[in-house]
Image (cartoon, rainbow, N blue to C red; front, side, top):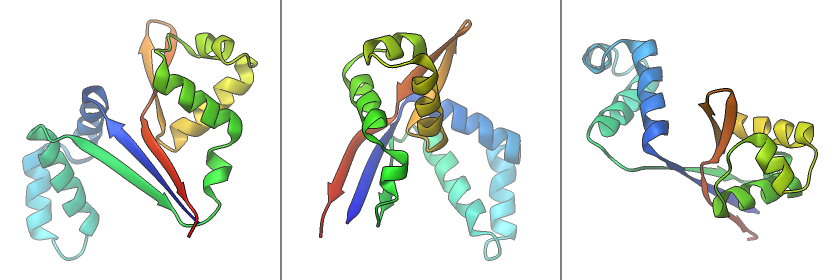
Length: 145
């Protein structure tokens, strides 16, 4: 069995990732210098540098996560799949709005959203005090070999 999750990255997600890179490395130029000095010892630096450069050039980003066993089902349960499906078809104004729409208890939906957020399948945006969940999932494929 193999499960493939394709995630999209919108502009806000990419700006957030750039802010994370700035906090971690300072500037793109300083990261570039580290890469040229430590090229062989830290391959993660090269990855981050290339990703950051792509963001700056306005590249469209799509991530893919592949599970080669049934561990996908510890992340994507039936109720979480329902949440992702609903969010892909409807705009959600808040977690409370989502809980009402899928007819589930707020606490359970909140817990599921936090699990999906941890796996970067959902991101949380703030509008004042409201937490707005936004799905990053574009496609989930489960293939049986």
